[in-house]
Image (cartoon, rainbow, N blue to C red; front, side, top):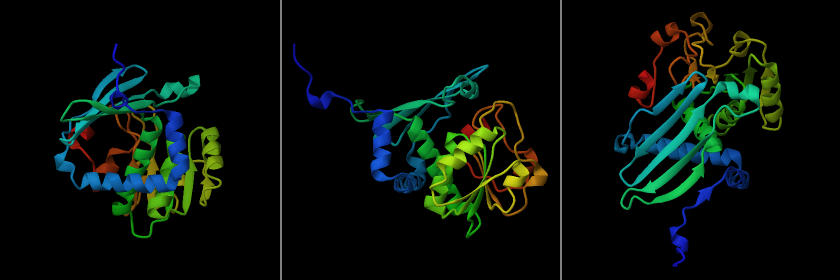
Amino acid sequence: MTTPSHKALVPFVSVDNMMQLVHSIGIETMLRDLADYVEADFKRWELFDKTPRVASHSDVGVIELMPTSDGEAYGFKYVNGHPKNTSEGLQTVTAFGLLADVYTGYPVLLTEMTLLTALRTAATSAVAAKHLAPKGADTMAMIGNGAQSEVQTLAMKAICGLKTVRLFDKDPAATEKCARNLAQAGLNVVRCKSPEEAIEGAQILTTCTADKQSATILTDNMVGAGVHINAIGGDWPGQTELAAGILSRSDVFVEFPPQTRI
């Protein structure tokens, strides 16, 4: 029997490995570096082979595959979204991904993407806000205070210079946990009792909810002119966050229209 060479082994980055990497680099530095990569990829957007997510829906959630290639590397992400998991002591989202060499077809990296998804999503939101939010914007309303909200806030601070975050969640315990975890981040953290209170004085509004119930988090009369909205929670059919009237009077920016229409 021939023992496989070391080169044949595919590197695997576990959640623990990813946590160690984030801590060694520093989360704000990592978010800035990720944002630079995201922005660079948007500048070569036409090179990517893009397709809407391959989704398998059930009554309790969704499981999706997300493939792409730039002609040299091929990658896919497996990700789920199960809002009911929280009540069972489980994570709403888990993910892993694979990177392969297009020339040989060989996989070159297998990695956890639960934590990486949170980081990448936050970095992408901050890139959007950097270009689209009002100049000098330093206050954000963060509606939906699950784990993603903490990383969103840190990314806005690292990349956009955020100074104040106004938190609201229908679950007060989620807001308390988020505020506690952000206590040492060098931000003014304000706990709010309603979405209306959260958006007071905020130039950036971020909605990060998970319920698949066609909800309206922001009504048309709540949102004035000139603010920037990151509506990041509505990412599959039946999961909405904004009143239709807000969209009809806004400039709307999306990454990939065929996916957005779904």
